[in-house]
Length: 107
Image (cartoon, rainbow, N blue to C red; front, side, top):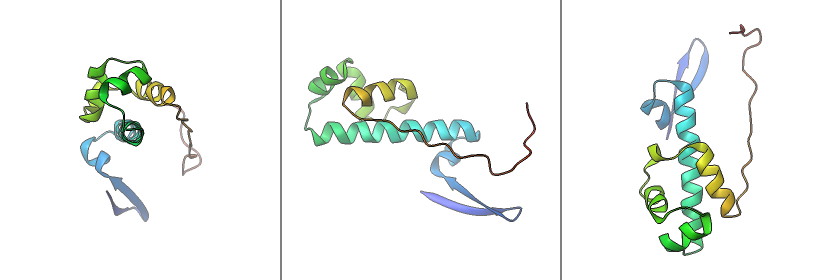
């Protein structure tokens, strides 16, 4: 779910993840984890795998699959989810966007 607001003449898009996390980086990581969990869950359902069969296919304990299907997002890292998706034969592509403003100060 997205909402928008104007900030200094620039339209800012907020997602539900932004509402959950004050830190924009943390919100983006949360969104990535949620998206990965969703595609893994869809693939498990598409194949009509039981939790045990899904765990076997992915190479994890059944309890990890149960946690994934219960949307226990805090139990998973992006790394772990990418590994799980690749084990199911999925491919992950990364798309980066350049910063909007030129002249950003170096940290």
